[in-house]
Length: 479
DNA sequence: TCCACTCACACATTTGAACAGT
DNA sequence: AACTGTTCAAATGTGTGAGTGG
Image (tube, rainbow, N blue to C red; front, side, top):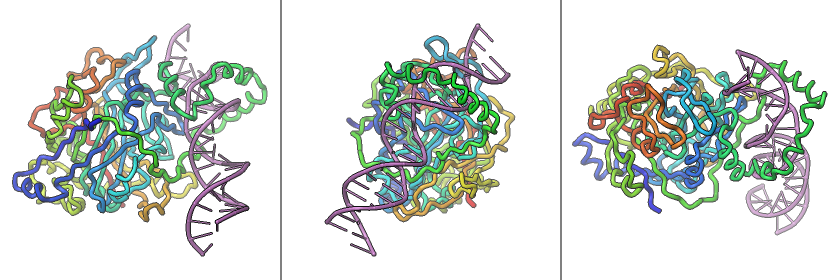
């Protein structure tokens, strides 16, 4: 199958455009495909739910991607963050999801850094890259660096590829972001839709024990009636529940997996810009969105160029994306002159946020986590300032891999919740009044309407762009 | 009563240290 | 010494379903 990803190149100034024709960097043609898209789609059709727990829970299906088009010898950093699908809170009623009200204020925003980062393009491309160790939590006070989400809210992961030699230069680098419509999900503390439960059990090896229905009920009989257990439980309740001792965090090296499943087509939206820029700014209009024609048709849009938007939301923008993904641009492009106005990066402000380290389990400062200040305002909480502490959720990794030490702490400042108009699967009917102006029930919308679009793009966007355009995705700080 | 959330649990896979063999 | 392969116990990852608390 062919890749149905949408490729959005940057729109570059005329003068640079010519350079782009010959400059391999400008010619960057990074492609990302989601592994196991069929599995994702089977979940998506029902309405994917991801369990979030206090100690942190992995996702299933796991986020695993294939990348191509990177410069083999250039170094890249891979990041993942979760973006709100809309500004609503949902509830499961009977057999379907319904809007239950406005979304809760955005919790501390965190970004997961792939433990192999930074690594050369050849490393990322040689095999599928998995984010198996990434965990989701509903604990806003989480000390392990997991991604914090609200239960009963919808999100979807974004994958960022940053060309940077080390974590310190991330802020100066060019980002390319990809999203896959079928990866959207509703965060829950307990499964709501039994169909999802069944799919999980049928596909997740760890849930294998639940496949034999006959033994389940019997095996747990009298579990809670045992006095000893009750005492134990009581005791545990007395202890501070916040002291989660899970060892989760010490995730070990998350290597690239050998197995390389056949790639199925996956819709990908790619953005080249600084995630710190506002999503709305990037909103593009309608490319491929809602295409009833399927991937083939969407491919026609693959040449569409998105222009990084001019950011309208000023604060906390870290830097601008360089117009050129060239290595040099990663550290200097921003500056200034080089990128021209068409990118609108002018609104990006370089800023070094306060950084707070997040201790890992040993109590030592986590080498991989840094809390960054600034939580983008949430549409539903317009007055909220950027005072939130943001963390880069970085699992420990084996430093030896590829000889690329993981530079420790660096943080991300984050971002914001974007309440892009969404993608909705059938299970998510458009929010009731007052619904967002452009909430599309069809998941294909996701593809183009989301954050990926660049605001400046041709000047037209969705009606609700304004709502979320002011929220930068996130920013990083370096120590 | 309702319902989102928490917890200990049984059972599954994965990890990684220790060891053996080449 | 450097690798590779084998064990196997500990660590981890699952959904369950009763219980909690607002």
